[in-house]
Length: 433
Figure 1: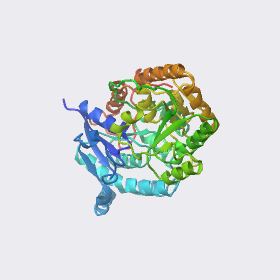
Figure 2: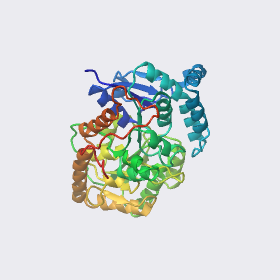
Figure 3: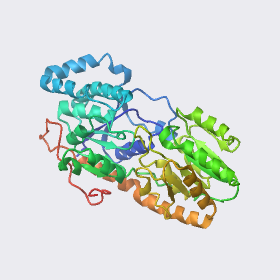
Figure 4: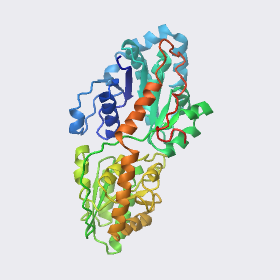
C-alpha cells in the first residue's frame, strides 16, 4: 500500500538557515512519505550546505511565476465556489497584521493559496502541512478552505511573536499545531479560542542529527575562546554580548570571541566592537554553512547564546545551535528566553542568565572559565539531555505520526477545512502538557 501524498508549504526550500526543516523533510521522505514541497517564493540565493544541494528532493517554486497565473487560479475558484471565494476575500486581505512586512507576506500567501489549492487537488494531496505559522500557514489555510483537504502547521518563534492577525483562526481550522518548546505551547494556547483548539497544540522537539563527534577539547586556557553564532538581528542580543566582553576585558580576563553570522545589524556590531576597543579580540567570519559549524565549534571553550526579546515581541524559540554546541560537549551560557531553559538548566546543563543583562552574561562566562571541571560536567549533562530530547528517530517519528493521524478517512473530506486533532500518543513529547 502506497503512502499518502502530503504537501509541505514553505517560504523557500532549502533555506540555508533552516537545517531543522530540511532534516525533517529529508527524514520523512526517507521514511517513505510521499512529500510534495511547494514554496511561496523562488529559489533562494544563499549558501546551502552540500547536504542540501545533493539531497535530490523535488521542489516546485511559485515565486514571481505565479503572477501571470494568479488571475486564472482566482477565477477558477470564484466560479467553482463563489461563497467561499467571497468569504476568503473578506477575511484574509482585510485582516489586521502586525506590520507592513507581515501584511505583504500574508497577502502574497493568500494569492499563493489559490494556486496551491489547484495543484494539491490535481495531484491527489491528502494533507497540507506548513512548517511555519505565518505566510506558509496562511497559504495552506486558504488551500484547505477551498478544497477541504485538511491542513496543519508548525510554530517556532518569529512566526508567532508577535502573533499574526489570523493565528486564532488558523489554529481553529487546523488538524493540529506542532511547536518545538513548552513556552510556545502556553503562548499558542492563550491565542486558541476553545478548549478543543487548545488540545490541538502538540509539543514535538526538532530532531537533530546524532553524529559521532569527539568531544571538544575545551582547554580553558587564556586567551579563553568564546563563540557565538546566529543571524545579526536584534533578538540575538549580540550587542549585549559585546558589552559583556568589554566587562571581561575590564576585569583583566584574556579572551577571543568568534562571532559568526550575517544580517542587517552586521555593520552596527562591527562598529560597536571598534567603539569598545574590542576589534582586536573579535573575529567576524561571516556566514557559517551548516557543515562548517562543528569544526568552528570544536575550538570553543564557551558557547554563548545572548538572546533578548525584540521590542516588536520577536524572540528566539530554542536555537538549534545550542544543541550543536552541547552535542560537542561545549559549556554553554545562554539567556532565559522562551524555550532555552528547557535545554539549558541553570547549574545542571549550563549557565542561564537574564536577557539583556551584560553584567550577568559576563559573570556567567567568568564562572565557567574559572571552573573547567564544573563546566565540563554541565556540558556532559547537556549533551545527554540534548541527545534524549532531540533524537531524530523519536522527533521525526512523532511528526510522521501526527501527519498520518490527521489524514481524512476515505471519502470523508471535511469541506469546512477543519478536523478533530489526531489522538494524543504517549511518546509525543509534552502532548498533554
